[in-house]
Image (cartoon, rainbow, N blue to C red; front, top):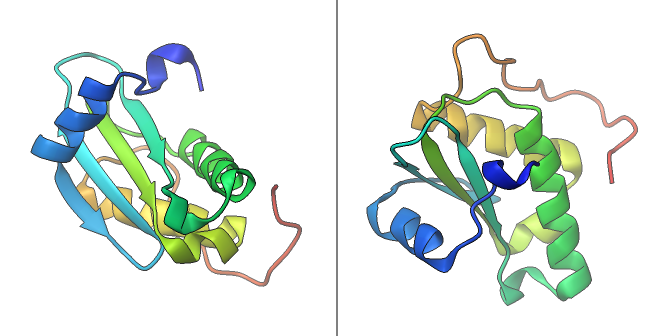
Length: 126
């Protein structure tokens, strides 16, 4: 993800937590708020409950890859938080969970790809 597509400052994360609309499921929590700009920015959070540093970073890398594949509407700040069970979830499960939450939040672009189907486990992305 390019620098302008990432949430990096503490105050941006705090604003998304304070003012954002929240959607959640078993694996993830998503907070969405308008940012007044033209670019949608993502931030990824995985607390210590998810696991050690290696596990948390793995989960965040998988979520970044899943977010890159989804077309979202412009002008939003989106914070994606991983729940404890995300540490043992496969990439396809995280990808699907993120797509479902973003669709529920109404932030997927109309011409974006559909929610990935649940299929037989194939070669997983790492």
